[in-house]
Length: 102
Image (cartoon, rainbow, N blue to C red; front, side, top):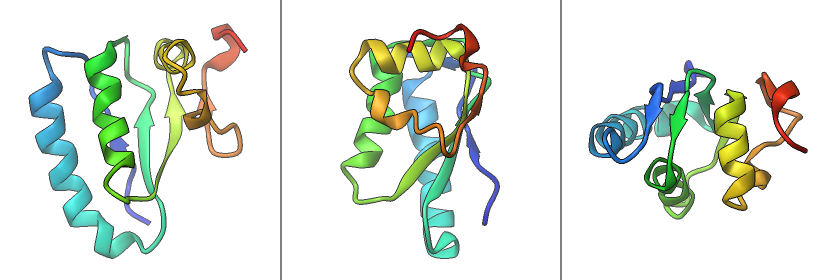
């Protein structure tokens, strides 16, 4: 299993293009190798907006199997606020969700 893709600290409109390009290159490289779900870590994310979450939503629309393996409380709260709590599967996550709303 390859190392998880590390989302940047700023997952927002200002970093969207660079993050998209880096993420797609990583996905292309690891899709054949992984054989299962790709893992994405959001543990360093301290700023996120709709553009950042759209990157992951687009990944879901590409028939690529992925899961979050770690999240920051900021990222978790953004997912919950935007109706994306299904991405926050506690079976896989190691996170600082203690401060996040259920």
